[in-house]
Length: 254
Image (cartoon, rainbow, N blue to C red):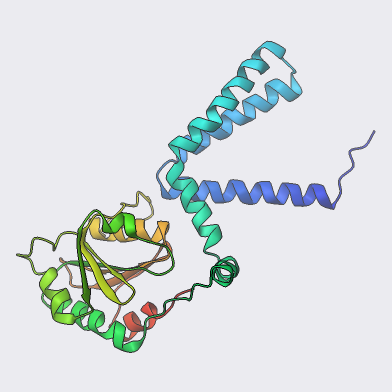
């Protein structure tokens, strides 16, 4: 009896391959690639024991471990699962559909909104003042805002520079900009454990990458060592930007 292979089987295999590949990318970004390999090995052994060898006693033990393990994995990798669901929901077509049903409008920054940030970053870069500015878009950053000091002030170049001045008590944390206003400063961001981040990039860059992986926010970094301006957006770095490149990138909201 020959095994029948149809279009449904092909789609099934393709979807499983895509799911495994995306899970591999998430585990690699979070530094949990060895855990991912161990899970795959356990699933492979479970399939061999239950489906091929048909060992009833050992198979029942593995079945119980699989049921309990599924709950444990959800608890253990809740951040990665959250990131996967957010990435799926933030896809251009899905996010447009969500905005249509919710009636929400995409909050895009204009030239007059961006220039205070651009000029402040340029001045801080020249003076080698470190800074980390996060611009909120569709994904709420209220949890991050609660880790810092709420300000709720209009966008102002001098205010941004004063907050990140070396003697300022809020200069070490991140500034959150929401709805064209400075919402908070001194905020704590999730740090990315992605092993592919270059070693010469410091903690500010890792924090910027972390928030860009968990939301659709732009994260601007001014390096204290080199004065270079960079942006992390949707899990990707844009390094050593000039004023025109920074302005162009901040207007890009997918």
